[in-house]
Amino acid sequence: MSDMGYPVVLDLEGKKVGIIGGGKVALKKAEKLLGCGAVLYVKAQDMHQGFSKLEEIYQENLFLIRGSYTLEILDGCMLVFAATSNPELNEQIKRDCSSRNIFCNVVSDKDLSDFSNTAYFDRGKVQISVSTNGASPKIARDIKDYLEENFNPKWEADVIKYGRIRDFILKSKLKDAQKREKLKTLLDLKPEYWDFFFEAIRKEVHIDEN
Ligand SMILES: C[C@@]1(CC(=O)O)c2cc3[nH]c(cc4nc(cc5[nH]c(cc(n2)[C@H]1CCC(=O)O)[C@@](C)(CC(=O)O)[C@@H]5CCC(=O)O)C(CC(=O)O)=C4CCC(=O)O)c(CCC(=O)O)c3CC(=O)O
Ligand SMILES: NC(=O)C1=CN([C@@H]2O[C@H](COP(=O)(O)OP(=O)(O)OC[C@H]3O[C@@H](n4cnc5c(N)ncnc54)[C@H](O)[C@@H]3O)[C@@H](O)[C@H]2O)C=CC1
Image (tube, rainbow, N blue to C red; front, side):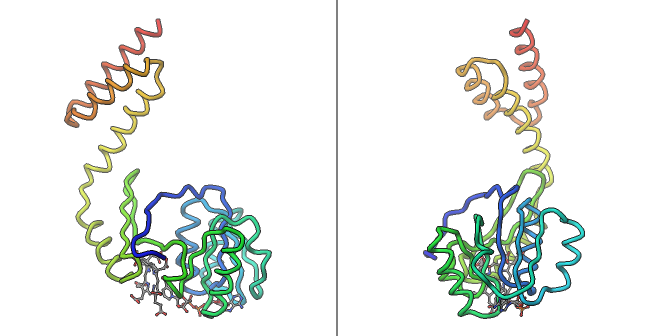
């Protein structure tokens, strides 16, 4: 991995993700991946007992396969986590992924990984994600905890409200130039005026449609 990565928000809904290894680290990754809607295949000799709990919650999205690593587990995966306790095996998994153009996270070696995981939390539509690019996962977590404790709940509500108005404008039958103008106005408007503005647009669109 290079010194600084390129942060993105991945839509994993319905996409196949593989984890090789079923220990504590694999479990932690699995919980988050399932929470994001991934279809998860986990292959490991021994599964942490926490996986049975996940199986109850995410029945049709989680497939637990007991046994040693074999190549078929990689078939159709968008992402793979090499999360065994055997660094040489993790390295082999990474090579197998590279030759198949699959992005691979090697939990035991940040330099080998195509991407790393961040410490994050969600508040409605807001997601705060912290990375130290492998330098200190512990400090990444501390920074995330600090930001979570100091998160202003107003931001969560504002984002939802703004998003609703923005969506309404974009999906309305207004002409492109009108949409741009409305979005620009919204951008400059203080949150306390958003409701009035939304009402006014709704009326305008309604008149336009009749
Ligand atoms: C490179 C990276 C690869 C990756 O996993 O993508 C990686 C690698 C390694 N982690 C190790 C150890 C620990 N990792 C944690 C915790 C987290 N680790 C996470 C991410 C990452 N860990 C990526 C870089 C992220 C960044 O730098 O910002 C978090 C943020 C997100 C997540 O795991 O999803 C999550 C906290 C999230 C939360 O709680 O919110 C703790 C602390 C704890 O558990 O509380 C410890 C023990 C203390 C310590 O060592 O610091 C080891 C040494 C293993 C060994 O000793 O052999 C390696 C291997 C190496 O460094 O090569
Ligand atoms: N990225 C991160 O956040 C962290 C990474 N680590 C790294 O993660 C590694 C794994 O840690 P834990 O999950 O705590 O280990 P663990 O010992 O709890 O689990 C290891 C898993 O690997 C599986 N495994 C081993 N050989 C296998 C094979 N040939 N085929 C299939 N599965 C196999 C085992 O069955 C077991 O499920 C550690 O060695 C460490 O390097 C450790 C802490 C945090």
